[in-house]
Length: 341
Image 1 (cartoon, one colour):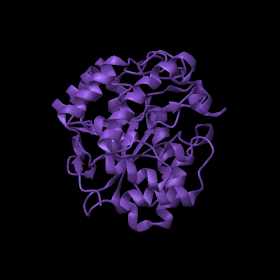
Image 2: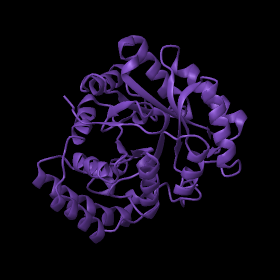
Image 3: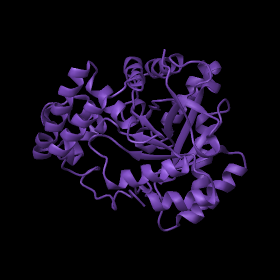
Image 4: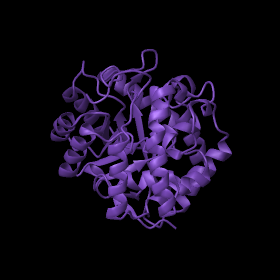
């Protein structure tokens, strides 16, 4: 049984969730995992929680093949099979991305369309708990985006408002318009620099939950990859520069150093990284993804791990010694990938 929990921020401050959340993307983003396996993974995470603590499930209206609503449809089938679990989860949905261009559209018309598409895909049993634009559309601006989100929220289409991949100034401006409950950003031993530090400081000040996605560096920090050739052809990670050639050979040095620390601690490398992410801020919730029940439980158990000052110092020393190289996404700069707007 998992014992540690945390309250969400903003208008969701009365909601208590597990210390580690559950990303559902890998269940449907490429080759869909069979429903029964997905359901076991989701159910295992919920069953491990004490009464009154909800599982934080993270999905999107583009997490299906070809950027479809397949992930939400899978979740709809889960609720149809297990209706008793509807009230035991907090569902966060990202949207507002145009499939053809892989870019954000923050207009009222498109966000409304995205929300309604998500509602239809999720089905009648579960209301969206939190909706968040996946990226900030600078052409529209955060003021107009928040006006739209508040309008849709007041219409009852979802309960709480979130953001994703915004910078600290944007977060503060958005929160001054209406309380932001959750902001989703990437945090891992691979990715925790000045931008993350500023967001963490702002979220701490404003009591906004941070859903820290990719705490395992898109799987690199599980230790499963020892050389570039370990990544199968067609795997999306084969296109990411951090997994390629000289970048891989450099970045695996940090993985090896962290693996040594994990072995001394008696935990898996993945658990060490998730536990470390949870220490980066008082409102930070690690958001690892999993499609297997065993991995879901392993991730949840990481929220129970206490890291000593010496262990934290060893991790920090490894991160200083072995600097990560390569871009976050497919050779694109943060600006080109619509990050930190």
